[in-house]
Length: 306
Image 1 (cartoon, helix red, strand yellow):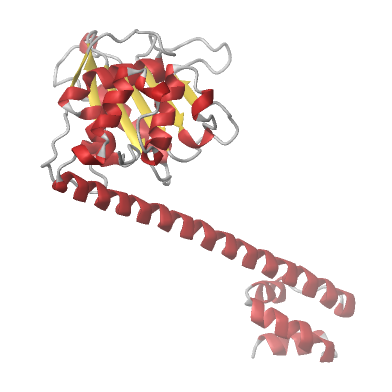
Image 2: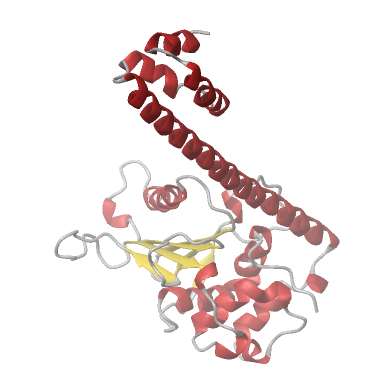
């Protein structure tokens, strides 16, 4: 068997958002929201997977949306690459899902709670080692909740923080997170995962053999596109590091030259100081050699006016 990674948003949608995925989604949500308790008994997927649908890179169609039996709305998203203001985007989507329930003149009593579940393939909360984090509106000092329980709930699952091996899996959440991280490396369905019928079904949906040529083509295209996006982000970070190093070198060169000039000629005017700070690294290196031939501050000013 060959399985396609459910971290690819198109495959994630097929696995968790197909018409036959109801039991899969119930099990997964109970695992990451309710610590494995069977709190959710039924739900309706309101934007089911459609293999023929055309979409764009940022199309929210690839998110999974469901309504629980008690009317709560759950919005589930798989995000492979980080982006600027990502947490604000998550909050915006949940707030929009909450506000869009009402039409003009509708009563606020009609509003149902909204739960946003976001799975990330990058670390979002550097200072926190928990894999699953849940956020609600609370008072900053006394920690009491502002809204009713789960009125607006944000759940984040950070895959890179999960380090367990297959033999170490214990909870239902462990097994679902392991499935998300490692499914593409399986040669067959591991026995400990097959014990959970919903995970076995999820793996069957992610099985390459069960996909049409069109589905495989789209999945491969999405995988390449997402990899390209991640590559751009990595490149930008490396560029930023190099620029930071360059800036650090420049600051050190400026500080050294100014110290040497002050030792030789005394105080330097703010205007001259400003001109020195605007020099490039190469110009600073040249000044570092040439100032040894200066006899007065006038020579420095003439050099800067060249």
